[in-house]
Amino acid sequence: MIPNNWEKVFETSFQHRAEIVREYLEQQGISAVIINKQDSSYHFGKCELYVPVKDAIIAKTIVVNEISFG
Image (cartoon, rainbow, N blue to C red; front, side):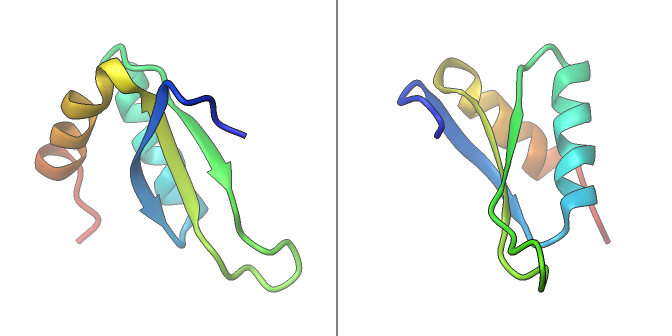
């Protein structure tokens, strides 16, 4: 369970993408954790990435402007 002072900034069906975003944010000095909500047998569901609320705005900006999976 994520404490109230953390905010979700990214969600994906692909765990490797969540790991890439987490690593990139940590390189920028932002702590990040992944909550894997995927079913372990069938691999459906989402991986959610959380950061402290104080870093949420900058983290969301980084995710939108600097990270691309295209």
